[in-house]
Length: 307
Image 1 (tube, rainbow, N blue to C red):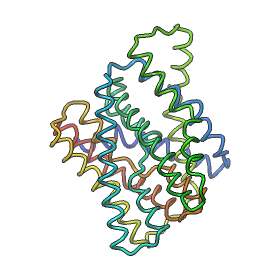
Image 2: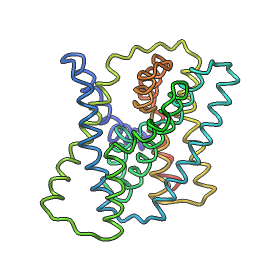
Image 3: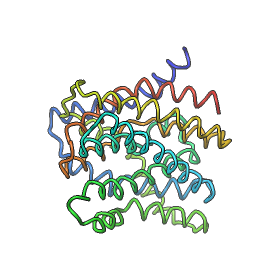
């Protein structure tokens, strides 16, 4: 019990304090969410992705293991969520929104701060989380957008749109420079480090600002199911998979914790953009974020004691 309380106070509470600050600031000052999102996506995130991958001691084999594990994990969740949606006789729009809210989770704005606090800025652990984030971002802005645009056409354009984002190039260059041991001038590394250090606070403030005006109503049965699948079933599936694959140590710990994140804000953003059950998509973000304060505490405890 003391360990659980320690995890909640030292890891979860600091995250929710920053989210609460963003929530309050948005309510008072009406922050420009578009600008905040652009700063995170085009300025802060690429710097952190590059510097962590460049400085980490990971190998390509581990990177591929993380990607393959994440892919298998998402496939299982997708099958379960679609089957559940059919059993509940949800319409096509709600079925897609429900599935997206289960398979797209906040591995960046939320996952990176959690990883940073749990593993005390361990570069290897952070590189695992960044690989998960890269996979999730690719999935969201490729399959996620294509699925929503399927009735409107323009699938190829939707996929190509992902490659306009700097996240992909930051990941590729970071891995390339690491593997080839290409030296970087200190003045460049210093600048990138300053930028990356600003990510965690800004990312959590942005999460708080983004959910500030979401009205939540616990009247949808699918909302309860989403919370159950995203925060409980997901980590259980990941735990079983990691044990069956024989993974252990920091790799297994970081992967298990990464699967317990709440629904990604991006799933709500693309649902609103393409008018696909935007109210439900928004509610899943705030509901899973709130409940993750309890479930994530337990998952961190389990990860640290089993692996």
